[in-house]
Amino acid sequence: MPDDLIDKYNTLIARSDFFHDAAQMAAVEKLEELRLWLESRATTRKGLFSGLLGRRAEDVPHGLYLWGGVGAGKSMLMDLFFEATNIQRKRRVHFHAFMQEVHAGLHEARATGHDDPIAPVAEGIAEQARLLCFDEMQITDITDAMIVGRLFEKLMAAGTSIVTTSNRAPDDLYRNGLNRQLFLPFIELIKARMVVHHLFTDVDYRQDRLRGRQTWFTPADATARAALDDIWNSLTEGVEAPLALKVGSRKVTLPRFHNGAARSTFAELCDRPLGPADFLALTEAVRVLVIDDIPRLSRARNNEARRFVTLIDAAYEAGTRLFCSAEAEPEELYATGPGAFEFERTASRLREMQSADWAGPDQ
Image (tube, rainbow, N blue to C red; front, side, top):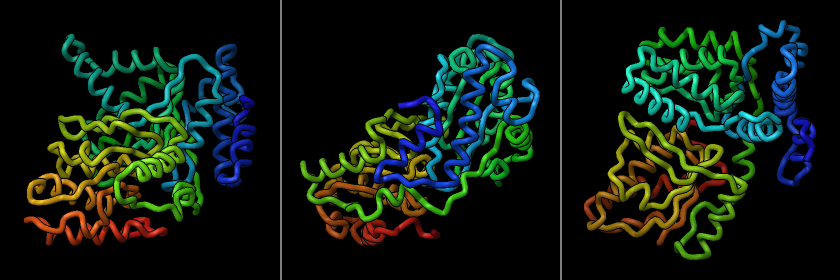
């Protein structure tokens, strides 16, 4: 496949399940400018990216902030860009996982007596990556809000270019967050040092690819597993990795994750002592959730049933798309037991979420 990003995009949309989108092409052109600049930077400071933007080399933005609605194709375009950029030191990572690593690095730096623990963490990251690509950047934690600004500033100063996707415009990051005024300089840093591009499209391509697909498979047998495998492969194209979510002082790990989609078994989600905060963090990070092997529930598994109810409530409110295999239909999963009456609402929500055009309660 050719290295030119525009050629790669045209090759991709030639497939029957992709369509040409003018908004995506505009983003591809911005990413192609950055690719050319990054590759030329090894031999000259006056890279093509600076020329194309009409700026001096020292004023070149240190990356691109690509934002837009769910399913607009942001992660797909970042994947194309990352693959096409021919440099040695580059890394693509989900923002949640990256911040988990940063917190671990800060803890280690503090333990060794560094006065400014962010400095050695940023230095280590910059040594590993001239290009750092983040997927689904969002700030929901005051600690992250205080760290990320200084970290990005040091990374940019060290020569690391940053490309990130987000569902939010920079001015909407950490909106209504605690002490948000302390976060505002970071927003200005993004707008001053990165190209901010709105991927504006009314089409949700992820939903279109899933539209009309069966979402609930029963019984949870080999046939159901094969069907979920097919859906999972269409979402990930064989690429997946664990995702660690920071919830307070704890870490919750999703074993299989890629491009806003996660896959777990019922046991991995509901046999563990997870609570509302964990499931809220999960549904903030995940747009599509595949759950294997949901069992029939009863008095003997009341705790697991309560966790499942909490998970479905969080997924419903967040507009998360569900694909599940289960021993029974939703209405038959918890027929008797202390929580059976309350489970009727969960069954109703599960049934509603099976609708082909379901996109959340407020969509």
